[in-house]
Length: 267
Image (cartoon, rainbow, N blue to C red; front, top):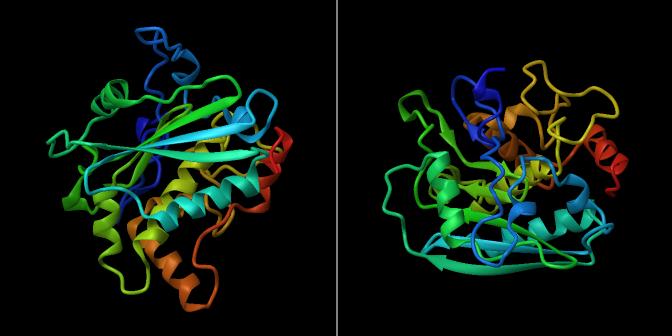
């Protein structure tokens, strides 16, 4: 399969298509006394653990952000609501770490994974499942600005995510209708869809609904997991249309994606 169909999620392009998730490798458990092995699995491998209370009844989301690039409180509360609606977790908490800039013009996946190794502090502990999200001040090295290709976020392990916050801010600044919180929420919830294992990234499809590209995206119109959200013009157009029509303004999972999550224990 073309690597571009499994690499970065929520990649917005004006032309072309770039896909979603990439496995950064399952480490050897890390160093020291902390067992990191359960947090170093392939993308989509922990959908059931995130959705159900069988092994974990709490989620701790570690927000590591470059100084000045912390996500909006509104987006994080929208994410909490999304997780409450789709999972059975009894507690969903956030912790925050402000980090210095790596001073990079762009970030490769290997550099992103190394930043996690250097800075992540929250790992699965008892009944608490830990998820790490890094909000970067640099774009992806996969971006091709001349072609209008920009990457907003990526899931690269089972509990690891990057959000290119600087890119989100640039995109949101170009619209008078869409707020930064709207774009952050869409990026975060789309990426969590891939952490859940959607679409066929680890969570089986009850009914076939993956797009023809086989890119772990949904073929149902306006679904949060639709490949349309890979396009800068696509997502901004969708959000602006929803807002103009007086609707919620945020894409949601369609019935097929929800059916898949329910089949493995989600709501």
